[in-house]
Length: 128
Image (cartoon, rainbow, N blue to C red):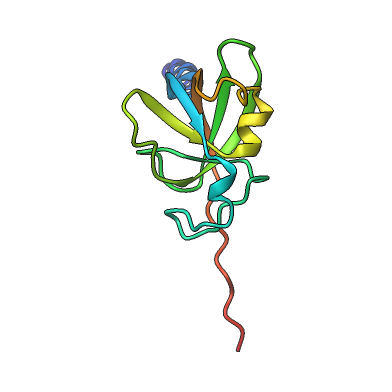
């Protein structure tokens, strides 16, 4: 009986922990076309069609769901750069990601950012 109760408690606690997500709210901006082809902080080359972002604290490779609060549109992006370095902004989106959530005309929008996973950068294999 003691084992059953302990198992149930563990089951309930694990479900509660899994439901807890890291969520941030604030303003998002995006990279303009002039940044296309430039190197990002993690060493990759920025491409306007990529679904990537800059965030000050999440590790490179972190996957974030970004939701435009005004229209409800969402996109999943991968952290590959640092920033934004403008007070009041929490994330800089790639051009394609900004387009996906309908923020092109506004330039800066209120968003909700949720951590959804991690995807490490691919390392190039050395061939002998």
